[in-house]
Length: 104
Image (cartoon, rainbow, N blue to C red; front, side, top):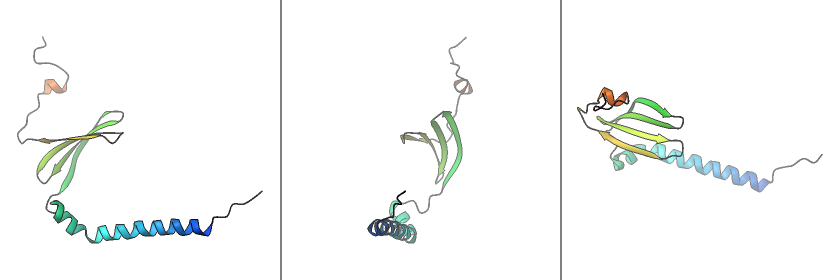
């Protein structure tokens, strides 16, 4: 039975790649404050309020971003949709139950 020994150049390539990833991570962590300030997100806090599973691979999440409520609909394929919810928005309970206002 033959044993496979890793080539020294292959090991070096993998170690160099991992080293580059760690270096990039450290730069991002070190400059996180500057990056947040440039993006304008340094003073905004993001809080997950609730999440609902709609279907097997479809979920809606309710977030509080800097005092504004945002609903995010996302699926397994990476597609997402966001909508900002206005203050004082009301929900008709009949709509949530699947009933229509004109139904008898």
